[in-house]
Amino acid sequence: MTHTVEAATSRPGVGRYRRHTAGGRHRQVRLRYTEQEYATVQQAAQTAGLTPTGYVAEAALAAASATDPPSIQPWRHALIELIDARNQVRRIGLNINQAARALNTTAEMPPWMQHALLITDRSLTKIDDAADAIGALARQYRREERGRSTASAAEHRNPHT
Image 1: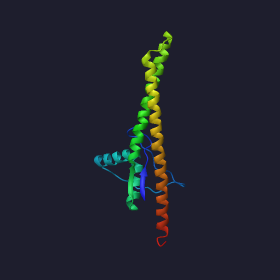
Image 2: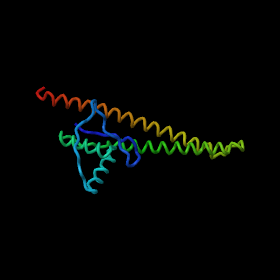
Image 3: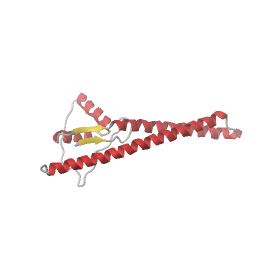
Image 4: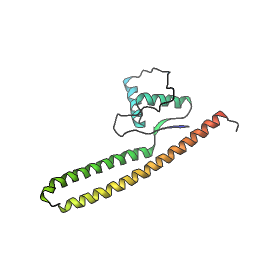
């Protein structure tokens, strides 16, 4: 079984907590790190899109069950960058709309404005299509992962079948 993690955001330093379980988790393990060790854990957690506590918990469980530690999938980096690019294009569109509103007082839109709007619209459509395609791949991957982990769990329960 492979532990995979999806980053919740592209903002640096922000991670998500682990998935919650019914009934909660009541057992704790306290750990102490040097500044350098903690920085290493913090960087790994950020890369995986988790908080340091969530990362350490997932990594410990992975080590105890001889599986891979939490990681972020390569396509996830592409999706995060694509989302950032889409947001930039949206901001450009907002700026163009504000400029058009300001120029509306003259009752004429300069020729460059129409071209800029067209480019912004085309770019946003392409980015949205690419994000949808990556999202579909991510959903497919998650379904396959769930199938593999379900099969692995069944094998562990009944290894003689």
